[in-house]
Each structure stands twice: as C-alpha cells, then as structure tokens.
Image (cartoon, rainbow, N blue to C red; front, side):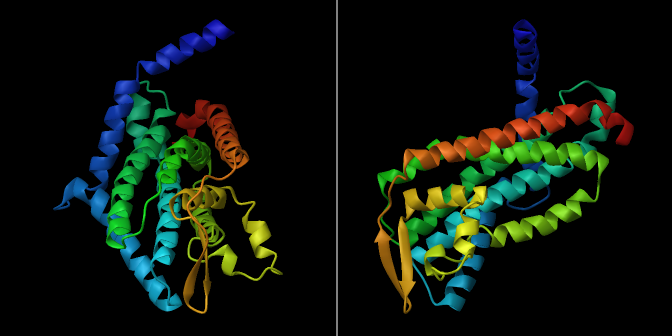
Length: 277
C-alpha cells in the first residue's frame, strides 16, 4: 500500500512543470487584452480596496487603523473567494483537454488556487503601499502572516476541490455558492469590528466559530493589533501581537480538515467526470 502511494506521488510530481504552465496561463487569461496586463494584479486590488475602504471610512467616520482593518479583511476574503470561484468551473472549462489527453484532474483546481495565491502576493504589495501612505508603524509580528499562510491555502484548496467536483454534476451550485459567499462576507466581520458590537449580542460568539473570520482575525492581530472606536475616536486596545499558539493550531486544523475533505470528495467523484462534461 505504501509503495503504491509513493509511486502515485512520483507520478504526479512529473506534472509539476505542467502545473506551473497552467498557473501562468490562468494569470495571463485573467488580464488578456488589457492595456496594463499583469500590472492589474497590483492595481486592481489597490483600487478595489481603496474605493471600498474610503466609502466605508466616510460612512462610518473612521480612518487610519480602521481603513487597515477593512483592508486586511478584504485581502483574506478576496483570496478565498477568487480561488474557490475559479475552481468551480476548472473541470468543466477544460473539457477538451480532459477528453483528449491524460492529466491528473486535481491539477486544474489546484492551478487556480496557486494563481490566486500569486495575486494575493501582489495584493500584499498594494497593502504595503497603503500602510506607508498612512504612516502606520509596522511591527515584526506581521511576519507571522507567512506562518499562517499555508493553512489558509489548504483551507481554500479544500473548498475549491469539493466545488470543482460537485459543479460537474450539479451546475446550479455556482448560483448557490454566490449567495453563500455574500452571506460569508458579512459573517466574517470585514467591514465592522466585533469590539464595537454590544456585549449582550450573540453575533460575536457565533462569528468566532467562522473559520474565515479566525484567519482574518489572526492577520489583523499580527499587523494592526486590536482597537475600538469610541465617539469617533480610535482607541488602541492592544498593539500588534502574536496570538496564542493554540489559535495557530486551530487554523492549521481548519486548513488540513478542509483539504482532506475536499480531496476526498474530488477523488470519489472524478472517475465519472467524462460522463457529465
């Protein structure tokens, strides 16, 4: 059994160069025929985040750390949203290639997750620009984001694998997932601070069970710390810090469980893909 697993792993490693080409193709396809091309991987998140943060900062009368609070939430949410949504039709969109030649089918959704990871990297450049523009002090604790990042990638990949497989059989899932993502966005405390909610409310307790919120909360903790808005003034509760190790274990637990379940669903359904493409 072990030898079979090792042989299968070696066989899949032969396709690593193909995977790299697919990732590059995904990025080029996204910005095909645009004047600025790949530069949009930096400009798009910067402009998108700027518009949203300025609108919410204006409406809520908050600035500075509050803008970074929104930006950090958007970065994580956009990565998961982009990766999983692109995975949806990663199998159905490559029907011609799948029917003609043998390619490990898992490479198709995986390539989209890695493409989104690269876009996240460019988004971080945009975030650094905003941090410098706001003259916000950066702590060394921000480096802990890269310790958490593999767990986030596993989390998104697991969801993407499951969606890619199920979409082959049930096309309506794209519409359902779109509605779910809207709900998930508002349930992840991207545009509001849990510290500003009433202590008697059950919402904060429920939201803390949301895995995506926990990823966002970790990123915010290591980058901007915790704060609360009182009468329009931003009150720092805690400077940037490293959450307890238990929190990191929870994030990796969420990532690994998501990846295992997603890979399991994909492997169970992949043998009949050709019958439904």
